[in-house]
Image (cartoon, rainbow, N blue to C red; front, side, top):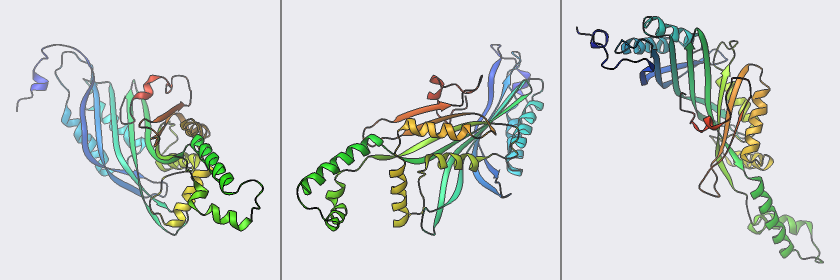
Length: 316
C-alpha cells in the first residue's frame, strides 16, 4: 500500500518542534494509596518532534497504538508514563529525539460530609504531563480544587452595619436584657448585612521527585484543602451547611491569603520539587475575578511572570 508520508519529500523542508495527535479518547486508571485504582475517561495528547527536514511526516498510528496499549492495560504511574515516552521515541528512532504526552481526566473522589453521616462524589479536573528530552524525564501533575472564599473587607463592613442596627434597636441608656439580645440576634435585624462569598478555584501544578511510585493526586488535594479550610461540599444536610458557614467565618480570605496558604502548604512537602499555584476568586461583588499566583521559586523552575496567564489546560 502507498505510504506517502514516508515516500514523498516535503515541498518545503524544515524541522518541526512537535507533531502528533490530540484528544485521543482512552480509559485511564490511577492507582490509589490503598492499592485500588480509579478508572476515568481521558483525553490524551501525544507528540514527538520531527528533527529531519527531509522527511514529510511521522508515524501517527504508532503513537496511537502505544497510547492505547499502555493506558488500556495498566494503571498510569510515573514509571508507565516514562516507558510510554520511550516507546514513542523507539518507534521514531530515525525521526525524533523528544517526546511529550498529556493525559487529561476527571478524578472522582468520595468525600464525607462535615457533620452528618453522609458522603458524596467530588470531581477534580486533572492533567498529567510527561516530557522526554535529551534523555531526561520530567513529569508534572496539575489539579483544580474548588473551595469557598469569604471576603474579609466585606465581613468587616457587614459587622459595622450590624453594630449600627444594634445601636438603633438598643439605644444608650436603655436597659439591655440578655434574653432580648439573644432574641434580636436570631432575627433578620440581627444579621442586617452579610459578607459576600463565592466559589473559588485553586489551580495547582507540581513537578514530582522520582521518589513517587504513584501519582499523589489525593495527597496534593488533601494538602491544599487542609490549608484553605473551606472545600466545597457534596452531600449536605442542615448541620453540614451550618458547619460550612462556620468554616467560612473562621477563614475569611482574600485571594492573596489563599495563594500564601497554598504556597506554605506545598513548601512543607519535601517530595515536591517545584510548584505553581493560582487562586481565582469568582467575585459576587463584580463581574471580574480576583487572582493571585505563587511559585516555589527554585532556579530554572516555574516562573511567576506573565506565563501564568496560560490556562491549566495548556500543555506549554
